[in-house]
Length: 239
Ligand code: ADP
Ligand code: MG
Image (tube, rainbow, N blue to C red):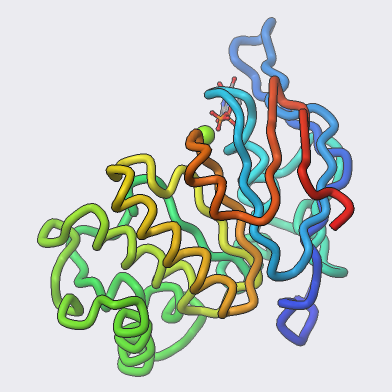
């Protein structure tokens, strides 16, 4: 299967009746997600809230093709994310999705610029061009001067801003952030959310943010609540 061209920043991300359970001992499979459908418009920012264990990360992982549903489907435009082979799914992920995790997950032995350059190099960009492009992104996100620092030489907020640059550097269609401010204080978290929402909007990408924090969710245009694996509420399903 080939990936549809051109780049699908105008394509919605659509989940149709997703179900996913995990085996936790043979007798007790956990239904992590139960019949969840959602249609995310291009450029839309969406928060995903709900108690711990309710299925938020599972939804994100299904939408990004990291895992496959037991039933139901995920599509980005015309391209089936959920039914593709492992190899195609990982290519879709590298090409169309950017990720920000709770603790940045930057590679400790690489500099900030090298960390940001990685998604480009994984997509076949040569190192000098990738590092130059990454450096431009660091400057754009207010991180000039930090290019050669390693993650251990940065504050938590700086590291998360580098993670934002890394999530956007390859012009993804969708940015997924799982508890992106979970390790930050409120003020630093707000700065990171402002940067994340503005930079994602400027790039024309849609944004999904899993969070426990109402203040973090408030940066998004639309709000989903997941409870016991079901979509409990959706502030903007029709938008
Ligand atoms: P949340 O992100 O809302 O905290 P998760 O989506 O991580 O919730 O998990 C939902 C449910 O699925 C939980 O009961 C969790 O224990 C279970 N679960 C998630 N991933 C796995 C896995 N890889 N193996 C077994 N159980 C899992
Ligand atoms: Mg989670």
